[in-house]
Image (cartoon, rainbow, N blue to C red; front, side, top):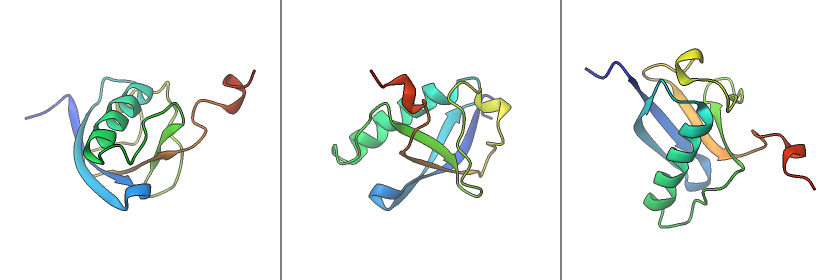
Length: 97
């Protein structure tokens, strides 16, 4: 049994695809975004672009997950739907010069 991971449905709108993936519950959302983005970039042959603007959203409510939150401290559970897409999860001002 995988007590340190949850099985979620990852929806990637730009690809019009969804994937069943395990994500670790003891990682920050920001780290999970990086891992998922790299995997989806590889699976899509580079069509999906991994970058600092990729964010995770709750698939039912549309709420943005904070990059600093641990997965286990969110509402992400086995069977949750999460959306990986471009957004402003890091805060626009952080990247302005």
